[in-house]
Length: 499
Image 1 (cartoon, rainbow, N blue to C red):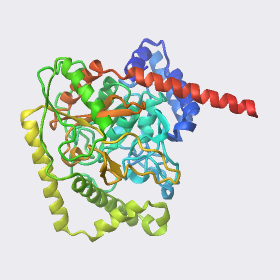
Image 2 (image 1 turned 45 degrees about the vertical axis):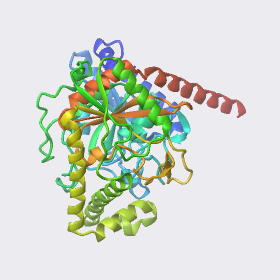
Image 3 (image 1 turned 90 degrees about the vertical axis):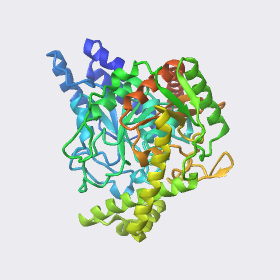
Image 4 (image 1 turned 135 degrees about the vertical axis):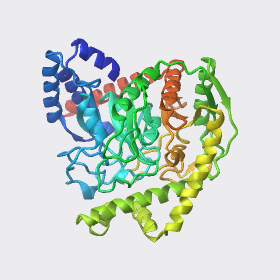
């Protein structure tokens, strides 16, 4: 049952918020030992909230469109006052947030019940979910392989059916990458749609870089959650007005008048043949559904390695600012707890310290080249389709430091983000989603990225809705959830029998 259907049943009172929350908790308790998605359960608080929401429902008072819906939040950046927030880092294991981010507050104000927080790599620094504190999160499609990152815990929890909705954040693909590897929907709206609040620097993410958004099993759920999270906020000087945006309605809108471009690699990315084939089949189904899809031959102005290096430098500056703010408050993690910080983050921050303002300006010029290249595509087309990730899910390591693939389609790639086709759209702020594009021959999920013009979020959702109709994935999720539940129960039964 997706969140939209659950909300309908909650309104009809055939299901209570308490029943929905208890079911989510039961699924987490059963499945999380093998998936490792939920790192901070908030069950007691969630049950109390459910009882309160049911009390309101009995008097016909509804908190909002998510009234009674169980939801998980990512354990990164997105603060919830009074709740632990580890950032996936051992050095932050005892940290408790003092404020609540705007979009988390909006989700709760709309009636969502936060039942826990989900796994992420340290400070979200890579497209894999693994860390020294909690270890790796697995894709439910193959428990030996990674869920992707950095919102891997949220994506895996939705794919496993623990909750219908989960929150993620995306600074280079961190919503879309795990959506692809877990066979679910991930959406980052146009930069500024969802406000960024919290922290001492309101201008720290002024570039269209860090986004928050939903992970869901269906397009209509992702649209509903994104709509709730969106809108201007006085704490974010770059937040955008709604301007009449109606994402839930866009799911059922007719995208037949939109011009849609398809590129298998944007001219520069390495993509495994199985991924190419899956995405191409879904594009064909979309065109057969009556939409105008054209293959386009365009090339981004930077090659794959240059794009990855540019992203690493941008993230390094964000981390330098973050650690500097921590140091100003009396906490110097880099010096006091160096072994708890991954070497990749140390390298990013060291590089950022040595950079000049001129280097930052040159990087902005490179980002401008990317923007101009994409603008040339969106001059003629409304939507661009690409693979989300160039590779299939990577095997988990056993050292807390799993990385992405070293090569894709025989080409060497940067291992933090270089194997993903997502980060160019963080440079530019375009709305972008990842939706399932089918399974590989070995049964692993493949994602397709749907990108729209800036501020044309409804176009993205509309095309995603049509793809879901033309190439549905609900059976794939149902099958993997059933296998996961049956396998876990068999392990428990055999384990108790052995005792």
